[in-house]
Amino acid sequence: MSTRETTTPRRAGRAGTDSVARKLARNVGVPVLSIVLLFALWQGIVVYFHVAPYIAPRPRQAVLAVTQNWSTLWPLVLGTIRETVYGFIVGAALGIGLGVIMAKVPFLQRLVYPVLVLSQAVPIIALAAPLVLILGFSVTPKVVIVAWIVFFPVTVNVLDGLSHVDQDLMNLARVYGAPRWRTFFQIEIPATATPLFSGLKIGATYAVTGAIIGELAASDGSSLALYQEHANTNLNTAAVYGTTMLMTVIGISWFLLVVGAEVFATPWQRRTVARRRWRRADRSDEEPAR
Amino acid sequence: MSASAILELRDVGKVFGDTVALEPTSLAIDEGSFVAIVGPSGCGKSTMFNIIAGLLAPDGGEVRLHDQPVTGATGHVGYMLQKDLLVPWRTVEDNITMAKRLTGRVNAADRSEARRVARQYGLGEFLRHYPSALSGGMRQRVAFMRTLVTHQPLLLLDEPFGALDAQTRLEMQQWLLQVWKDTERTVLFITHDVDESIFLSDRVLVMSPRPGRVVADITNPLARPRTVDTLVDPQFVTIKGQIMHLLHGGTP
Ligand SMILES: Nc1ncnc2c1ncn2[C@@H]1O[C@H](COP(=O)(O)OP(=O)(O)OP(=O)(O)O)[C@@H](O)[C@H]1O
Ligand SMILES: [Mg+2]
Image (cartoon, rainbow over all chains, first blue to last red; front, side):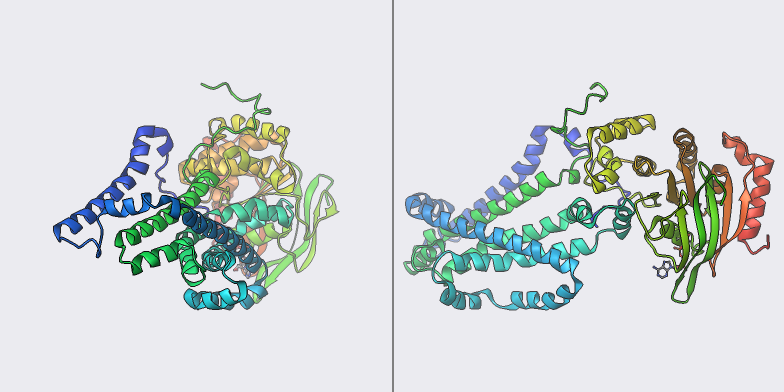
C-alpha cells in the first residue's frame, strides 16, 4: 500500500513554518516566472533572427489573434472543454471501475488486461474514422476518444494500488471482524488514493490532446482544431500559434484542477496536523486551546 | 481446563507443505496473566497467533476462548504486530478508533474514549496529528491504544517492540506493564528478546523450531512492580540462564 515506511523526515511542517507570502511566491511566483521567461525567449528568437511573421509570429501577435477573435473562438473553446471534461469523467469512472474489478477478480484480470494493452496500441487517429461512422459528427466520438486515452493510466494505477495494499493491514481488519465492504472503503480505497491520482494526472495531461485529435478527425465544421487548420491554410500563423496557446491553457487548467482535487482529498500528504473539522459537538472534553 | 483459563489450545497444529510450522500443541492461559513466548525465528510463534486470531485454520485441534470454541473465527482478540500498521490518512485519534470504524459507526463515546486513553498514556498532544509526524515509539503506542479500545480481554502482541532501539524499548516495556496493570487484560507476548520476556511476564513459553513446539513452560517468580533493578535480580539471571540454555541447544 502507499503507507510510506519512511524513517527520514518528510519535509514536514511546511504549512507551519512558512509564511503565506513565501508559499505563494514559491508555488505561484516561480511557475509564472518560468512562463514569462518562455515568452521572452520566444520574442528574443523572433526578433534576433528576423523571423518572418508568416513563419512565426511574435507573442503579442499570437495573443492578439486570440483576443480580437474571441467571440468566434469562445464557443469553440467551450466545445473543447466540454469534450475534455466529459471524456475525462467517463474515462476516469471506467478506469476506476475496471481497476477495481480486475483487482477483485483475478480471472477477469487475466482475461481483460491484454485487451486493455491492445486498446492503447491502436493509433488513436486510426480509431477516429470508424468512430465517426458509428457515432456521427456529434460530441460523442470526441468523448469516446478522450475516455479511451484517459481510462488506461487510471486502470493500471488503481489495479497496482489495490494489489499492493499491505496484507498485514488487511489481516488486521479481518482480526477485528470487519466485513469486506468496510475494509474496501476504509482501507483499500484510501490506500489507493496516491496511485489513483497519479493515473488521473497522466490522464488529465492527455485529455485535451485526445479532444483535439477527435475534433480533427470527426468534426463537421466548427471546432478549435478545425479553426486552427483553417488558419494554417490561410497562412495566418499568428492565429495558429494563438490557438495552440488556447489548447495548452485548457490542458494546463484541467491538470491543475485535478492536482487541486488531489491536494483537497489527501491532506495527510502535506500536513502533519489535521485541520479542525466540523465534528465539533463531541469535542466538549477537549483540552482548552493554548 | 482450569477454571480461570481465558484461552485454551487443544492439540492445535499446522503444517505448510513439508514444514511443520506448529506441532499439535495444547496449553491454557490464565485470565489476567502476562505470558511471554520466546523462540528462534521460524519456530511457529506467529503461526500460533494467526491460528488463535482466526486468520489461519489449524490442521487439527481446537481453540477455545472463555470455554467456547472459536477455531477459525475472527473478531475475538486484540492483535498487534511489529509493524504498527497505522493508516497514514487518519489522525492519531481516528487511528485509535479504527476497529470501530471497520465494524460499525464510530460514535461520540468511542472518540471520547480514544482521546481519554491517548491523554492518559502521554499522547494527548498528538490527537490531531497524522502518524507521519510521530516517532517509532509513539506510533507503537498508538497501535497499542488502537488494540486496547477494542475491549478484547485477550491481547496478542507479536514482537511489538522489535523494531525499537534499546532505550525506547525499555520505556515501552514499563509503559506496557503500567497499561496492563490499569486495564486488567490477558496478554500473550511474542519476543526474540529473552530479557524482555522475563521482564514483562508471569510465565515464559520457550519454543523450538522444526517441528515448532513448546519445549518449556517456565513460571516467572519475579515480584512486581518490575523496575530496572529487576534486570539485575539474581532470580532474573537464573531464569535467563535457563532459557538461554533451552534456546541454544540444551536439554530442559
Ligand atoms: N503461509 C505460509 N506458507 C508456508 N510456510 C509458512 C507460512 N507461514 C509460515 N510458514 C513457515 O512456518 C514456519 C513458522 O513460521 P512463523 O512465521 O510462525 O515463525 P515465527 O516463529 O513467527 O518466526 P519469526 O520469529 O521470524 O517471526 C516457518 O518455517 C515459515 O517459513
Ligand atoms: Mg513471527
